[in-house]
Image 1 (cartoon, rainbow, N blue to C red):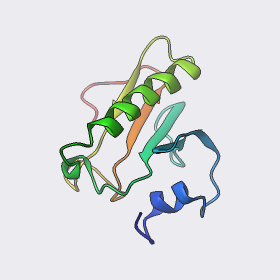
Image 2 (cartoon, one colour):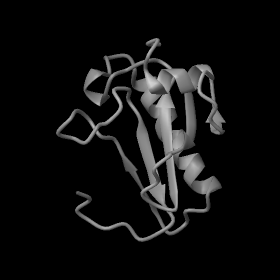
Image 3 (cartoon, one colour):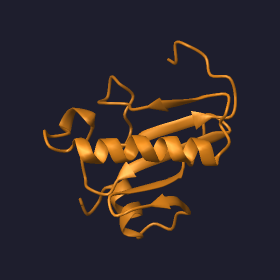
Length: 114
């Protein structure tokens, strides 16, 4: 983990956050600036700057994250659907330099997103 990374601090428990899910490898919590009625972030505990920085052999954490997203969507009752977003790099809209996945739902989502 990186000492001054916001999401690393949350994963270490240094920033008080209600965790919706925590495993050995990831944490999930509500986004502080929600874009939908349900807006959850799922973050690996290991500091990975972005999806572009995922290394070969790290597919296990990606699979765990996707299954966590599925389970959180079910727990939140998103039966009509949901969206998973991964912003990568500045042009991709990434605002925190730590890989994270957005789970959005609870309303009809438009396309294209932005």
